Length: 122
Image (cartoon, rainbow, N blue to C red; front, side, top):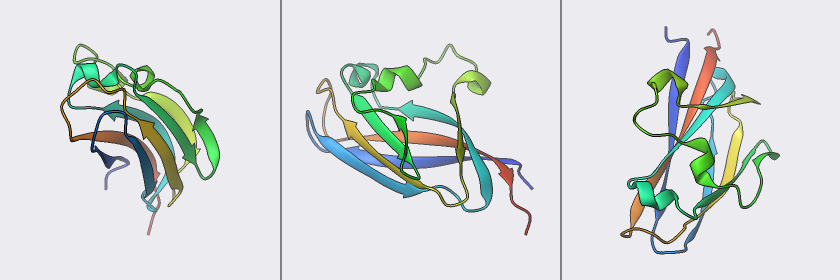
């Protein structure tokens, strides 16, 4: 059995400057969210883009938090790519608001990756 899991939360950005609401739940079979990574299809999409994020109504990133702060380039080792957080998983509510910086071709899909750990025994 896998001890860790990477959960993907995808969102579609329809047009320049769009504000996209993100609503999801973490996997119920894992205890903790220990990392977060953001991915957009083009490097220039990060310019001016922001993410406000809550886990179980607890603010993780405030309004206006630049998305580029939770990503990295291909030169970074896969094991070091995740922004470290300590939040409860187990079906937690993930709620956020992504604001596009208006720098790319539309529409596009962005992805938030959650690193989940400690699988719950069944």
